[in-house]
Image (tube, rainbow, N blue to C red; front, side, top):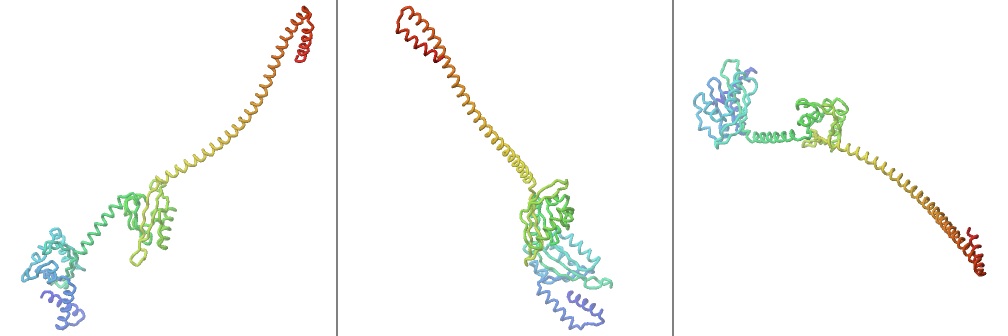
Length: 386
């Protein structure tokens, strides 16, 4: 009844502006089409009259809640509490009241609200309610608002699940030491985790969002990063484990192992760029220390090799010198032995000469010719070795 009345007012207003009046038959046809559309779309419909605070709802409005319209009284005025308020979730009642009251005070555009209502099975379902002013508020008449009532529980649960996953994912990326960020196809950051924000030298994510590497690093580092982004977005080729340096807030050089991957939509078009950076500064410093140590060891090895070669040559020289000295010693020893031998023979001859003299005296005393001959022989021999 009220829906028909309001549609009649709406049609009348429309055609009065064009200077014509629609026939009752045309209005009825339009009303029937409207009802058919509402029923076919499985959408709840409602009407609200501000003067009497009367709320009218169609059958679908209640069926979405697992209820029957016949169980509610629509014969009197001020039934909004019976029809709506008692079914609202306690946590949503105050917010719904404020939103609807605000719209009644300034009924411009569309009214829109999300809230929970109690199903007959005891569960809570999410409702998306939208409405719009039907008549002209400047004519001083009763404000009439018509609207729709849609069950969005499934979508709301999906949204809440996505939100929970987003919170979990955000908690994860914000608490790992690697830099993680997402950029649009213009190279502007749309997500940056805490590590990335700190790496850039900023204090909050808001400071880096919407900026390219050219904006964030005013040097060759920014140019290098931006050119890599544009090249990758154009070619679609990923960048995997690229070692690159940057300067932190204190100006100290740090190193990252950077990986950038293009993100594609269902049509294969690149729509985002996902980047991950693993800080390898400590490893890089260790590599430099190890490299320097290896260089020092290599130099020391060369020096030791040279010293070993010099020692080898010196050893050969000493060995040769020793051989020469040994030969000399042998020669000298032979000479000394020969000298001592000759000296001993000389001493022997001297002693033998004394014996010969005694023998001669014996010969002289005994006048033995044989002994004399022996004496002569021995004397000649002595002269030969003297």
